[in-house]
Structures are given as C-alpha cells and as structure tokens.
Amino acid sequence: MTVKRGIIRRTIVRRVGRNRIRNSKFKRKRHCNSTVTERIGATTDNKRLISEETKEKISKGNKGKKLTDAHKELLKGPLSDEHKKKISDALKGRSQSEEHKQKTRLARLGKKDSEETKQKKSAALKGRKITWDLKATTPEANQRRSQSLTGKQKPVIICPHCGKSGGAPQMKQWHFDNCKEK
Image 1: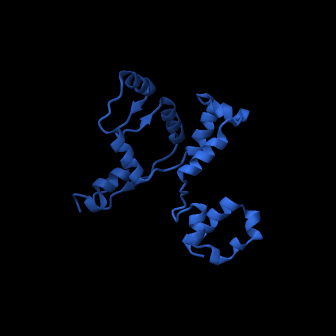
Image 2: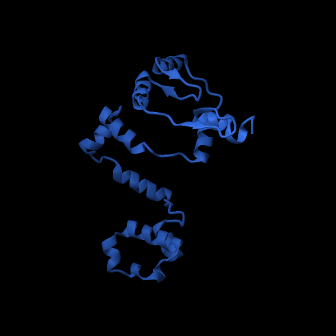
Image 3: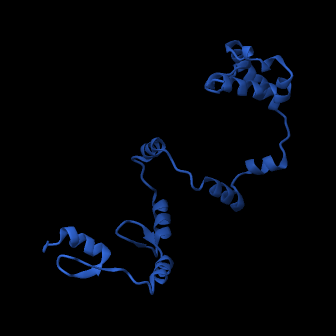
C-alpha cells in the first residue's frame, strides 16, 4: 500500500468507522481514489477541507451542548499544580529541532525583559555560583561532588623523556609527544 493510499484509507476509517468498513465496499482498493477523497473532504496531506456550510452545521450542532464537569474544570482558568506537574513530566526529554530553535530565537529577537521579569530571574539565580563554563552550580551539588571524589587516588604518570610525574591531563598536555626534552 502506498503512502497516499494509506492516508486516504485512514481518513476513510476515521470518517466512516472501522466496523462499517469491514463489511462494506470501502474495503476494496478501487474505492481508494480521488473521488472518494473528494467526497469525504480529505487531502493527501491528511488535512480535512471543510466547507463553510459544513462549518455552520457543526457550529449549530454544538450550540447548547452541556459540558461535563471534567471539561468545565479544564476550561475554568489557571491549571492546578498537579496538572502542571503532569504536563511538565510529559514534555521533559523532548528535544527541539534546529528550525524550531531558530524560529523561537527570531520571535524573541529585539524584545526586552520587563523590570519585574529581571527581578524574578535575579532572585532565581541568587546563591548559585556561575563557573567558567557557564553552568550554575549549587553548594549542595559541590558538596556531593566533593564527597564522591574524597579518598579516590588519581593516577600518576611519568614522562619517558624527562622523568617528571604528575596528573594525567597535565602530563598529556605538556609531556610525552609535547615534551621539551624530546
């Protein structure tokens, strides 16, 4: 099945219903063509084309409907902390495409933060130490890192050219292939 046929078939299933398709003429491939697509109002981009008349009918049908309590709660206003937490958990770990990052950057370009926003940002960062690589570290994080490294022996290596010994990163930078006495 081609991609176009798959999209058309999925649209037909969505519009007509799976049970009706199992026992109907829609099941045959010859019905997955442009006339069926035009009839149900779909495009190959899987977007529905709705006429103004249909929009009027949908609007008329929805007027006066009673909303459920759960739906009313969602439409009420500010979200509860629990709901915010669920949304936050669902969005964590997602990465943005480069295109999206670029669009976000262009949307923010030229906009200045208000004084209130600057104060909030400042308060949020108070007490944090900014390191040379611009990562904010807290005193607790520094304490954990210090405890994890306490008592561990770092390897000491000796340069074969000059005989000096020291920690691996420094020795590799200044000795071995880069030694002055080579």
